[in-house]
Length: 72
Image (cartoon, rainbow, N blue to C red; front, side, top):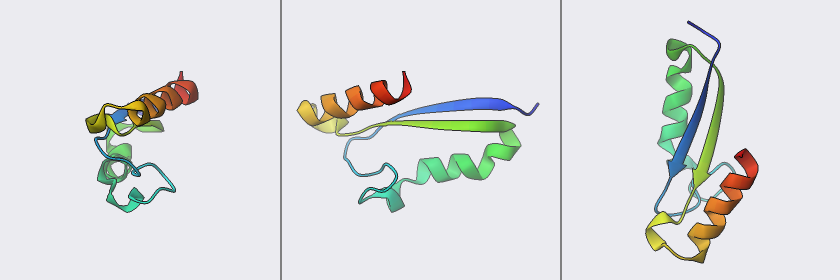
């Protein structure tokens, strides 16, 4: 049952949870997925992050558009 690929799409209300950002240490979801990856048979994992969702302004639109450009 191995060899699976996971694409995790996340939308966070605030900002800075992506790798190399100010709140990276508070992004528990990615770490939890990594911790159980072998139990799920995941060989490959991709994380798509969109932030500023709760603000619903141009920052969210820019973050969403950047995520689309990187992963679509």
